[in-house]
Image 1: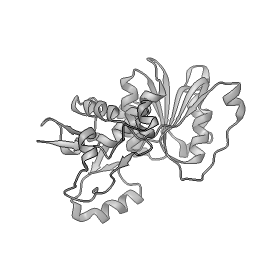
Image 2: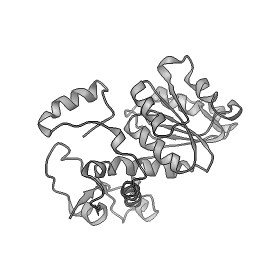
Image 3: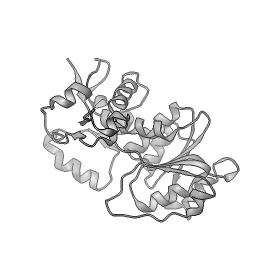
Image 4: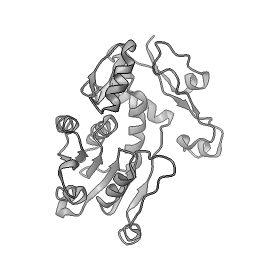
Amino acid sequence: MRVVAANSAPCNSCFYCKNGEHSLCDSLFIQLSGAFAEYIKIPGIIVSQNLLLFPETVSYKEAAFLEPLSCVVHGVEESKIKLGNTVVINGAGPIGLMFLQVVKLKGARVIITDMLEERLKLAIKLGAYKAINVAKVQNPVEEVKKFTEDKRGADVAIEAVGLPEVWEQTISMVRKGGTVNLFGGCKRGTKVSIDTSLIHYSQINIKGVFHHTPGHVKRALNLICNKAIDIDSLITDEFPLSEISTVIEMMLARKGIKIA
């Protein structure tokens, strides 16, 4: 038996769960321990809701992407992307590149930004219409708008970095009536400045999306099993568990994309 588990489970009895908003569960059980272990004990509440079988055609490395991909599926569904939309994704790390692939499945044209060429080159390989290195342009907002119809801005803008300054840029990249998904989580206590006219007169929709639900977990696994997401391209290095300190040093130096 080959199984993969998500890292949480909702209570199914609080106000939010009964309202179908399971990611906002008042008693959300999150199991975070075990990332650097060969074995992990999975609590019963997760087993009953978010432990899923996967076939021999899916590798353990692919299955390990279940939790972050589930969050991305949630983010895409909440963004209400329509066929033919132009979507900008700020951040081409593992999350941003998964967003790119899922958004492409919705039939949208994707512009993606980052500061690292390695990530942007992979984004083009994975189907991005345009990849912009924001470290090389004076005004990222105007640069993105140049590649939208009549330079009016994207239909949907997604922030996948988690920095206040990128939140503010993302808000300015969307067209009138567009949707902004501030997906990347910033540090608690940080604040952003928003031109109120964008919300009132331009009627843009700003929303945050947190975590996932059992439904998103199941749909994410379906994407993995159907090979709809190129997981292998995101894995740039592999190390044994005994070399975990090397992996952490690489992550801190922003080397590679995802390390198995």
